[in-house]
Amino acid sequence: MVFNRLKRNQELNDSGFSNNPTNEGVRLLNTDGSSNVKKEGIGFLSKFSLFHTLINMNWGVFFTLLFLGFFLTNVVFAAIYTGLGVEGINGIEELGIESDYLKAFFFSTQTITTVGYGQLSPGTSSISAIAAIESFMGLLGFAIATGLLYGKFSRPKAKLMFSDNALISPYKEGKGLMIRLANKKASQIIEVKADMFLAYIEESEQGITRKFYSLPLEIGKINMLATSWTLVHPFDDDSPIQDITPEELEKIQAEIIIQVQGFDVTYNQQVNTRRSYKPDEFVWNAKFVRILGHNGKGNATVELGRLSEYNLTS
Image (cartoon, rainbow, N blue to C red; front, side, top):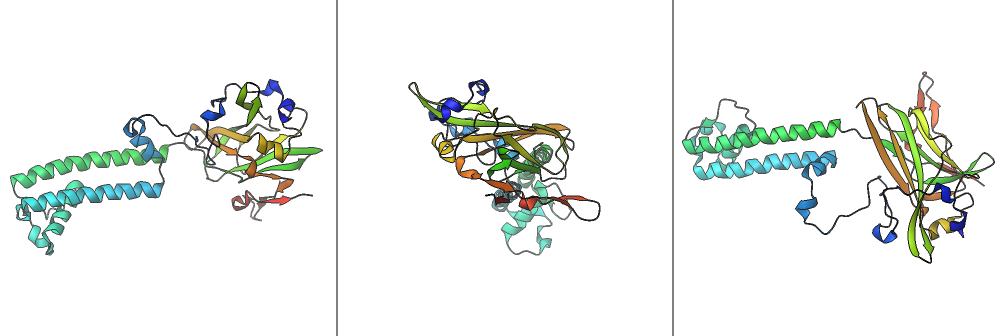
């Protein structure tokens, strides 16, 4: 059995994951490196973090939400101004717009942004009171939006690309497990360190447990990630999976976990990222194609669009 071949001295007891497989999902990490955990048993508001959600969401969705918030706020205040009577707004007739609601809407946009072009101004005490409230909300809202924008721009994150597949490739006199990664941004990441782990299910008389093993890398640390880096775990005498087969990987529900950390010079902070591979993402007897070269102008090149490409070997 494969379990008997795994070296117990390489077993990890501090992986951060449970040893009970019933406490975990189909995979420990999603393909983007995020944790595959759904928190239940408490109310939505108790576990919901608005800041975390906004700071981590897609840029397009983020700006769409900002625009919707700005638009809907003006819609509400325009309705209030219309109800109070737009004749209470000085200079409103000079807009050249027939709809009272649209007149109120454009007055609202100037009020919430505190632009103050000078053409429109509150003319009654009730309009002035609502305008004061809206101005306060606008200042507060734009301050929050500015903070979120700064947080999204300044949040350190390793923008690394990983190959779509983990390859079992010819290596020296035998084989090795290979995964390729690269920094897709122009920022420099130095003092880069990588760790590779194996998680798998073990069946015994005591029941089913999840085990974790460290997979030694040929090179686990580099000074700078300037082009691409192929992580290699040699299938030698120190490898706990030296003679493992595709069928055995499927049977034990193996998952290879990669953790990379380094120092981002741009942010002047430590950054880290993760990636995992399941047996259906392994390709046996394959080798990554070469993606490094030069452009004839003195520049080294790396074809990031071909990071995951490989050729099958005999």
